[in-house]
Length: 197
Image (cartoon, rainbow, N blue to C red; front, side):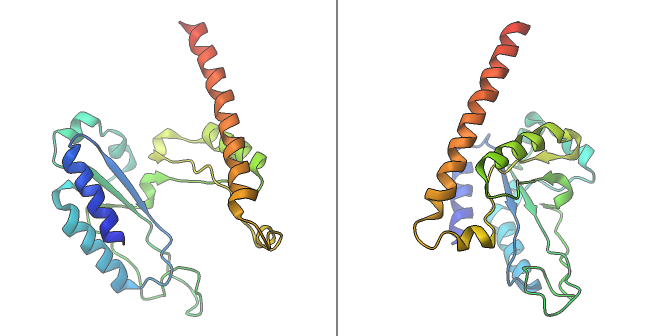
């Protein structure tokens, strides 16, 4: 399945050679060192010289421009969240075991180059408020910025939903709240732009 998805990305880049694709890979449940090696080899073999090498610092990454990238063969940035070693062998929380420290190849960018916070709530209004706070407090010099406007279900929210769908109770509410918030933000931004011009 993952190979097919990556092949579709590669095909897309063949048709659209000026596009830049950023792929953020994380949450490795039941992954061990050999699984990471296999996935990283597959990425390397499939994308080859389309992979953009990891810069030495975040500051260097922020100096990349489209022209600079277009003048190279690279079109794909892979962000890879290597799991932290577990202190206990009994941990089954998606982290690697003590011997599974992952060394990233040069064409894989570590987490230091991307910030990807998300609201940790199942309440749509609080999610929107948290997204606004995340966007207002971000530091652009810290690298690539992602803000996940998602609700995070808790055990209680799952238990309270014995029938029906999570989409109906959480997904649609969150989408409505986010769209309403985006409209307000866009209207405010448009008004400010109009006043400045």
